[in-house]
Image (cartoon, rainbow, N blue to C red):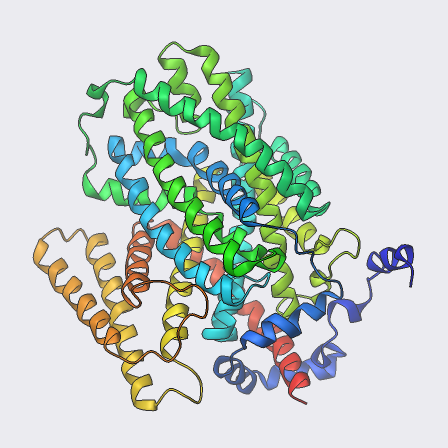
Length: 567
C-alpha cells in the first residue's frame, strides 16, 4: 500500500467497527446480555491488572503506526519549561496572592516540594515503562483497570480544563495590551449563569491554532518550543531583576495577612503552576534514550522552575501591595503601577508566548494520554490511530481540541482552576500510591502476610493524611491533634519501611522509599483538602459521570479486549 493510500485510509475510518469493535457492542442483544453480566465483569476488572510488557508491546499495536523516537534530554528540559512556566506563573499568581498575601512565596515553595516529589514518582515509572499513557498506564499496571479509568477520566478532565484555562488567560493578557479591561474581547450573555456568561472566541481560536501545530509533528513542535522558551527565559530574568530593583520591603508587611490557612489555600491553587511535567512524561514513547534523558529532563527542569517561581512571586509582591494586585494580569499591572508602562507590554508578550508554548506542549501530551486510553478501549479505539506520515495521534488531539474549545468559550478562570487543581492532585496521589505498590507487591510472589501488613500500613498513611486535612478544614488549630495525626502517619510509614521490598528500580528509582512517596501522598491530600467545598462538589459530579460511563461502556469494552487476548 503506497503512502497516499495509507493516508486516505486513515481519514476514512468511520464505520461502527472502527469505534466499537468489541463483541458486546455488535448488536442490541449482545449489549443487553453484557449489561446483565455487569457485576461479574466489574469484579473481573477490579481484580485483574495490566503488565509492563502488555503496555509496552501489545497496546501500541492498536495505533497501527508507531510514534517517532525523536526527543532528547534537551527537548524534555525545554518542553517541561515551556509547559510548566507558561501554564502557571502568568495565569494564577494574581488570584492566589489575593488569598495568601506576600506569603505567596511560601505557597509556591510548598507546591514546588509536592510537585518535585511527584516528578520523582513519574520519573521512575517513565524510565521503566516508556509509553504514551503516562500515569494512566502506571495505574493500570499497579492498581487495576477501575482505578486507572477514574484516573483516565480525570486526565481527560485535566487536559480539557487546563487547555481551556490557558486559552482564556491568553485572551485576558492580549486584552490587557490593548486596554485596561481584561474582558474587552469577550461577549456577555445575560441569560447564562455567572461564571459561564462571558463568551471568549479568542480563547477558542488560540486553542485551535496550537493544537493544529502539535498535530503536524512532535519534532517540529519541540524545536519551536525550545527556541521560543529560551527567549522567554531571558525575559523572566528581566522580570525578576526589575521586581527586586523596584520593590519595597514595606509591601511585604504584613507577611501573613490571611494566616497559614491562606498560605495553604493558595498552595492548592498555585499547584496549577507546576502542572505540565506529567504531560511531558507521556512523551516517553518518543524519547530516544528514556533511561538517561527522562531523569535529567524532568527532575532537573522542575528543580529550576521551583526556584524561578519563588523569585518571581517575591518580586511581584515587593513591587505592588498585595491588596492592589490584579487577579487576571498580575505582572503587567504591577509594572504599570511602578511607572514602567513599556515593561507591561514586554511582560504581556512574554506571558502570551509562555501560554502559547504551554498550549503546544499540552496538545502533545493530551493527545498521547488520550491515545493510550483509547488503545485500552476505555474510549473508542478509533482515537488511538497514529497518522502514518506525521507520527502523531491526530484523532485523539482533535477530541481534546474540540472539547477544550467549547469549555474555554463559556467557563471563567476561577471555576476552571479549582477543578483542574483537584483533578491533578488526585492523580498525583494515585501515582505515589502506585509506586509504593510497585515496590512492595508483586503478584504471586509477595507472601500474603507481607501483603496484609503492607495494605495496613498504606491505609494508615492515607488515613492519617486525610485526618490532618480534615482537622485543618474543621478549623481545629490546637497543635496536639496535629501531633497525634502526624505521629500516626510516621508510624505507618515506619512500619512500611521495615517490610521487605519485592522489587527494586532497574535504572533510576525514587530515593528514600517509602518516605518520599508517603510524604507526597500527605502533601497532596492536604492540598486537596484546602481547595474548598465547591471544588469537592464539582469533582464528585464529574467522577459520578465517569462511573456511569464506565458501567455502561468502559467495563464491557475492556473486559472483551482482555478476554479476547487471553483466548
